[in-house]
Amino acid sequence: MMQSRDPKRKIFLIATEESGDRLGSALMKVLRQRLGDGVQFVGVGGRTMAREGLETLFPIDELSIVGFAAVVQQLPKILRLIRETVDAVTEAAPDALVVIDSPDFTHRVARRVRAKNPAIPVVDYVSPSVWAWRPGRARAMLGYVDHVLGLLPFEPEQYRKLGGPPCSYVGHPLIEQLPSLRPNAEEQKRRDVDPPVLLVLPGSRRSEIRHHLEVFGATIGRLQAEGRAFDLMLPTMPHLEKTVREGLASWPVQPQIVIGEAEKRAAFRIAHAALAKSGTVTLELALSGIPMVTAYRVGGIEAFILRRAIRVSSVILANLVIGKDVIPEFLQEDCTPGKLAQALAEVLTDTPMRRQQVDAFAQLDSIMSTGNKSPSVLAADIVLATMRKGKRIG
Image: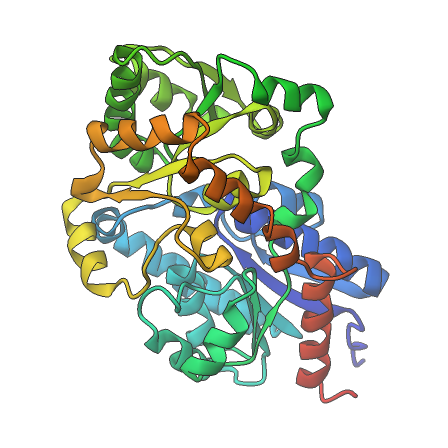
C-alpha cells in the first residue's frame, strides 16, 4: 500500500547563537501564522526556537566558540557537526533551508547542501559582513544562496555592487524593541541629573569580557582620580555573571551589576553615557539615544588577520548605519585607559562630541524604518516566496 505524501511544508532552520535563535523564533511565529498546521520546523536552534516547535539536532552551546585560536582547537567537533547537519538537511529534503547568521558554520552547511541537492532553496537571514571584509564572499554566495535577508539598510546596495545574490532589507530586530530602549518622563529625568549613570558593556562572550575588563576598570579608575562623579552600572547575562565578577575584583570602583535582558534595558533607559565593546550593542545604545565611547581588543592572531582584511573606515555598527563616524572607537593598541578616559569625559558632559552623537542618533528611526511591516513579517514574506519558487508554484 502506497503511503500518502505528507502535505506539510517543511522548513529547515539553522541558528547557532542566541541572537539568531531569537530571529528564528520570530520568523517561525509568522510562518506558523501564515501556514497554520501545514508547516513543520526542523533544524538547529536554541530555547526560543524550541518554544515555537523546533526540535534541535544538538544544543547550540556546543558552538559558542569565539576567536580564531579557539576555532582551531575545536575544529574536529565543528566539522563533525557540519557533516551531521548537512546529512540531516539532505535527508529531510525541506521546502526551504533558512540559515541564520553564524556564517562560519551555516554557510559551510549551505554550500554542501547545495552541492548534494541543488533543488533545496536557501535563504540567508543576516548577511555576513561582506561590506567590512572578505567582499569576495558576496559573489561566492551566488552559488549557494537564493536570497539574503539584510538587517542593515545599506546591505542591498552592497550586494548589488559586489555581484552577490538578491538581498532585501527586512529591518533590524531592535526596531521592534524601541519602547523598551527609550525612557519615559521619569527615566528621562534620571538621565539628565547628576551624578550621571555610566554604563560599562565589556561584551557578550567570555573571551570578550576577559579582553576588555582590565582596561575598562583602569579607565574608570582614571575618571574617578580626575574627580568625576558618576553612578556605574554593568549589565550582563546570568551565564556570564561569574566571569564578570571575577574580572571586577581588581576594579577601583565597583559597578552595580544588573543581570538579564529586562534589567539591561531598564539601565539603558536611565543611562547618560556608555563605554562599550564594539558590536551590535552600539546600535542598541544609539537607538536608545546614549552617547558612547567604543573599544575593541582581540588576541594577537585575530588582530593580525583583521588588520589586513578590514575595508571600512569604522567597525562601529552605529557609525556604518548613520553613514558618518560620530562615535569614537579605540582599537587594539589605541584601547588604553588614558585615551578612553579622555573620550569618556567628553560624552559625560555637554560637549560638541556629545551633541553630535545625540543629533545623529535622532536620525536612526527614519534611516532604519521598514514602513508598516515588522522585520519578521518581511522575512517570512521572502521565505514563503522563495519556497514557492523552489516548488515551482506561482
